[in-house]
Image (cartoon, rainbow, N blue to C red; front, side, top):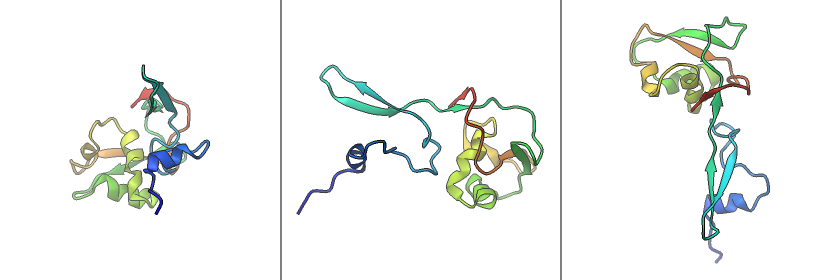
Length: 127
C-alpha cells in the first residue's frame, strides 16, 4: 500500500497551488521560500496588508455598524452577516482589536462589519 503524503507535500506537487483555502484570511497572502545553508527550502506566508482603519462608512460604503448584544461572539456575527462562522476574521480586521474576543466582550459596543468580500485589495496596515 502506498504511503499517504502529508498535506503540505501533496500541495507542493501541484503547480500554483496555494496552501490556504479560499475562505482563509491568508489565501491571497504571498508564499515565500527561504533556503537554508544546507539547501533546505522553508516555505512561509508573507505579511498580509490591511487598509488603514478610516471613518465609519454607510451601508453603501465598505462597512456597517453593529451594536453588540450580550452573549454575541465573533463567529456568531460572521455566521449572521456572511453565512460562514469561519469568516470572523473579516470582522476582527475591520476593528482596532488585537484579540477577537474584544469585539463582543462588552454589550452596547459598536463594531464595524465589512460588507461580504471584505476590504479592497490595496492597503497599508500590517497584520
